[in-house]
Amino acid sequence: MSADPTPNELIRFDNVTKRFGDNTVLDNLCFSVQTGKHVTLIGPSGSGKTTILRLLMTLMKPDEGVIRVNGGQLFPAGEKEVREVRKNIGMVFQQFNLFPNMNVLRNVTEAPMRVLGMPKDEAAERAKGLLDLVGLSDKHDVKPTQLSGGQQQRVAIARALAMRPQVLLLDEVTSALDPELVAGVLDVLRDIARTTDITMLCVTHEMNFARDISDDVLMFDAGRVIESGSPEKIFNDPEHERTREFLGAVL
Ligand SMILES: Nc1ncnc2c1ncn2[C@@H]1O[C@H](COP(=O)(O)OP(=O)(O)OP(=O)(O)O)[C@@H](O)[C@H]1O
Image 1 (spheres, helix red, strand yellow):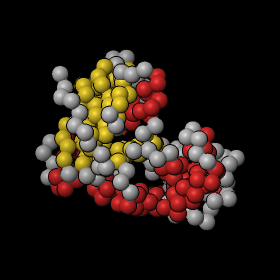
Image 2 (cartoon, rainbow, N blue to C red):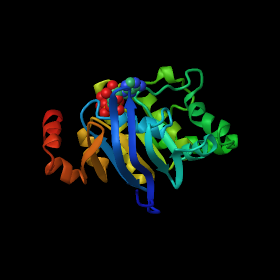
Image 3 (cartoon, rainbow, N blue to C red):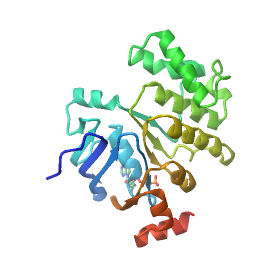
Image 4 (cartoon, rainbow, N blue to C red):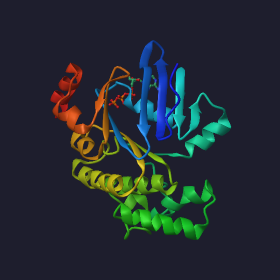
């Protein structure tokens, strides 16, 4: 039996198991993220990090366990509850998938207008503020194809924030970018982490970025959290042999 969630827990996984055939990708996983915190998931390839984000996006369901977000339940839950709970969650993927025929401003206003029914003026006002935040105030009228990959990813970040999510999920958002564009995107995310109160759950292979933005780092191995703590603790004084091996290989 698990304890009831505390009021400031925004995300909570209780004994979540996910299998693909014989492959147990998440194994009785328990963890939580407090409101307003920035939490980074690190660990070897295949340890289950992206699967956690996919479960939160309801792109797939777990086999067992309970997933709660902002006081509601994402699993197990009926369709209506899932829709309500999903509204709290924004995501930025590796591939930005912008609408190619819409200009940058429209890419950011489209979902708030269509999904939230936000009036056009209000959506445009909000989008302009967000495009300022991601450093694209001079690009409102251009099409995504006229932008660099890094600029497109910044539009995708603004688009995710336009829906006013409580939590922003970031899935290796720089791994599809040319190396020279990575720093610009990470700087934007550092700014967002510093200047907004949004909760972040982030899968990244950029250890310096993880060190900068995280309140907590969770180290995964084979579908379990084997160690967690402040970035200082995890990066400077890891307890677990597997964490030391992993950091030794990536740093
Ligand atoms: N749709 C799927 N069907 C079958 N197996 C899958 C599926 N998605 C993920 N897996 C398997 O689940 C395991 C965990 O994958 P996941 O993408 O969560 O790992 P990860 O820790 O994010 O790895 P990486 O750092 O390489 O992205 C892997 O063994 C992967 O092959």
